[in-house]
Length: 271
Image (cartoon, rainbow, N blue to C red; front, side, top):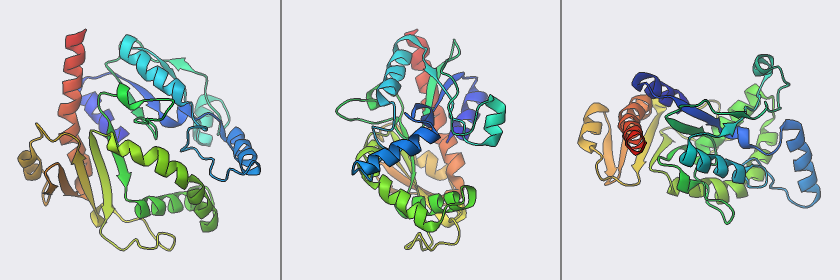
């Protein structure tokens, strides 16, 4: 998704301010381990990065609101690995210092887990002009996590299962409801058997998948054009089309480019 929008912004001459979702985690890697241990000792076995307590959601909403009103804000970067540690001069698992967005940006792009959250404390969804959901079906998501955690982080299957179970309440309460807020939702669905994700030997490829694209408001969407440009695609509902998985990048380009240009046009007219 980020790569697709980078291409759109570069092609259309748009300057974006960027927020990576993990910049607004409350804890760095070491602090998160301590917080999880303390939560478990207190009887909470479901403390996770998905939940409210582990994230600076009020601060994130404030940045969204400030950018909407004044065109500026701040963010930071979470350092994932040794390569990024060398680049930023800080240890992996830590944060860089907070820094202001560059001046003169055209829009704010957030990529993360909490861009459309609504709770009794925050309403981040109301600040976003365009909300895009990208999610695989649940078994495919688990397969991807199992393979990533085992190959990159050296975790056992059992350890990944424990992580999935710990995150499940927050996934249901915080993550899933956001997809009812999205203006466009892309959901990848495998066309091979993923009934037992913990035994899968590889991640289904794009050629072994379909993508369901759902529009919250289908008015103005040229479905005939999209299905003609995306070979082997079809409409499954009045607000949804299904495309081959290998056509996802092209579909995003065709769908998102005019939406972004409409946002930029409205923004410049308002200014």
